[in-house]
Length: 359
Image 1 (spheres, rainbow, N blue to C red):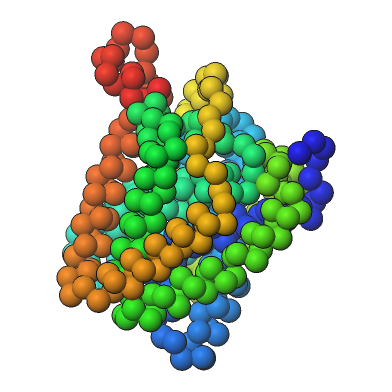
Image 2 (tube, rainbow, N blue to C red; image 1 turned 90 degrees about the vertical axis):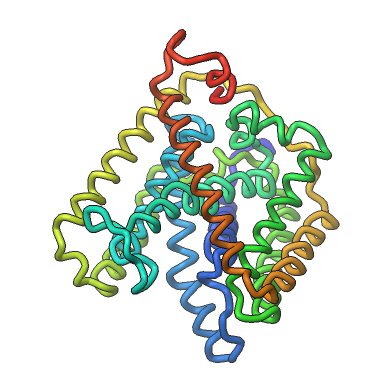
């Protein structure tokens, strides 16, 4: 679409991006699924999501995406480091990096929970909260495909044909269904959680596309500098309120905080170096081979709902979820290593096979 989107069009796009990030990071993870179907519990869950969780994910996604799109290009390796910064909110807001997921957490290093930190910073937040939501948002809400074009060639090949692209979509929705169902107390809870997301998001998506907003690029929908400054205010407020109002006693342990500060410093430095590298590269345009249609959209949601319902009845479902988290974390560690290589690589210093993968 020619021209510039109005500020209200941009605001609408930010709401949609926020919902996409919230869906993949919180509902699929089981953190914000409906564990009780009592009306009061459902209402409380919805209110908490509207006031805290959706703004939390949306603001992080939009602010970090703004940094990458404004000063660089959204290559996988650059987005990965931004996603690590995203995940570090699990220190000051939820305190999970310091206290773990529960009383059974036993592996700590420097006052930081080892397993939780690895899963959240190498896999869940970089991919499920940030990169994948940006990929989906670009594909559904814009005409640009920069996240797709920024994939390394072997990963880009997976989306280079209609059959492969469809297979990737199907495989990913199957995974989402397994993860949602694996943490659901019953098939009904999984079904209602997914259906509620569908019922809320679908009319908004219809209105969004009917207004033609999907003809803009992601860069056109990013905030202005002044708007970004405004968005930073509620984000800082969330950190302040949750930081001091939830498990505040953890904040008085200096050494664990110092470890998190070092992780912040390292992630910011690596993001800066990666953005500098990505900005200099000429990236060929790419197009997603599968056209978004009503039938495909509804069909993928049906796959999610059916898979989650079936998996929720499997006795060892939690082991399946843990296995996928382990695989995802190992894969994330691999991407982390490749992201480091991408920053420091020089001609002749790495072998041909590695250069082929990281480009």
